[in-house]
Length: 283
Image (cartoon, rainbow, N blue to C red):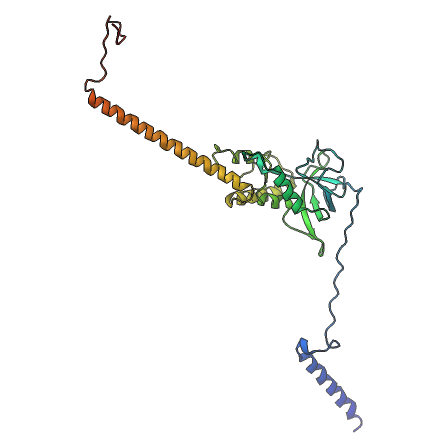
């Protein structure tokens, strides 16, 4: 009889555990709750003010400003496109402000484009930089594509800030590799952005189609500065239509006048040649 007691106790214990497992989570006590999974601590980033990331194809850093840390706007990183990451200069690769492809009467809007850049990359933002140049060339350490890093996960956004700025309508693909210098011309035969037949690095070839798609989407939807471009082309089309309508009416009125004149002068134009030299209306 005594040998059966431990067996009965074990069975009762198993039944209690099974019943506890069946309880809804909200009815369990803290002691019943399964242990929470442990998560990896979020990565931490610190600014290295002396790190220029020289010859690094990719690197993680922190936005420290909007001017070349070396203080030189004359080469590679101008005041419009420049981002300082740690102590590295990063010129936003393959894009430029839309004012260069649209003639805006009041002469704006570089300041708006710069503001859009700064809003997308506030100082202190952790970013991943992908250089676009050819290793070994003097310009290699200037240009690049910038991706914002999620500080909680350490994962960089798939879409570059370069592409985001173009999608916002105040930046366009750079004219050296695209037809953006023609798109804003009212006499251009196309309003579709396209790449020129030019040489790219492998990195640029990867990013170029995304920049073209972003530009065409902004143009089609008349976003940001592209709205001015679209309006200019619409105004030009309207003015052209008005001119040709006026011209057609002028021709019609002229033809009508001449037809009436012929009715009034059935003999047509008469000529009095006084001396027979073929010159009319001489005495």
